[in-house]
Image (cartoon, rainbow over all chains, first blue to last red; front, side, top):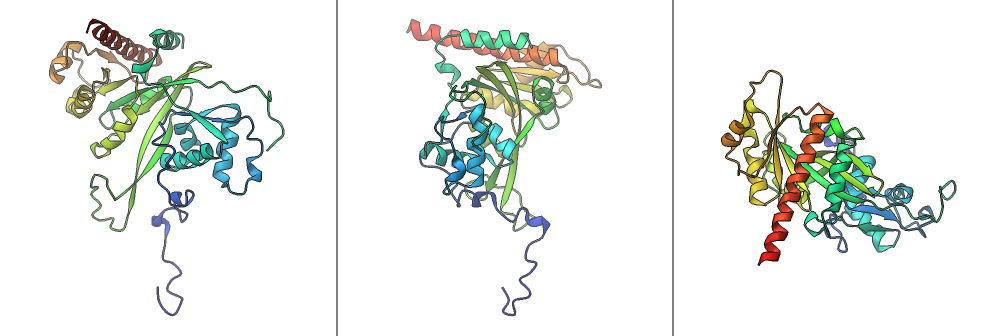
Length: 131
Length: 202
């Protein structure tokens, strides 16, 4: 920074990318203690009692958006990231906050090796054939 | 927004979600394959990489750039209201391999898409899934101007285990891609069945 206070004007240009860096939304946090690496296909479901997230001033607009989007149709982490145009890492932190505050819960995908039987895989095959 | 909510009180369906990965070299048709069966236009998620702790990116010429973006295209197939299959195209560049670890965790299986003109482009993906015992199938994308080879030749060229299915396919064609995906699931089923058998036997 120069002392005359003028040269500081155009310190960024288009090449610098967005002026608000994505992780500013998470106040610099890149991970969330409670949520170790949410899977891309983990499903985020809004809790029925999460009526009015807008009134909670601790939540950012992005938090509120996630609560509203997952209310009627649960969404995966990947879908939220694509629809909100946010990096996956940012969505993970925001969802972690919402879980802590009990606005949403997350249902984690069952690894195929832990499926109780083969019936789900048969359903997948039949479903694909029927497309 | 409080008003206008439909069917208040009825909890939404929480679907079982599964994922299949689509790997292969740059330009081999991964996103085309995803788009051929996805009910949505393939979406893109991005992850920002920072310099710290990441494989070194060649940033010469762009000094000062501290982050780079890795993109993954994905599609969705709702098989039933409560059963949804996601297809993830893996990032092509090898420097993004650490992303593969995350993507492949819990994956049902994978398609390695191959182009016979550049078969070496899929060596890395084959190697990756073999090492981690992730069930995979090789789909040979039959480009119009590429010579056709029997599946057996491709199997030999890639030095695949006998159990790995090799199918010729057209990544643009919905029916063809459906068969590829059915092949992956069947292969995964036979693998888990064999694993169960071993567990019972020992």
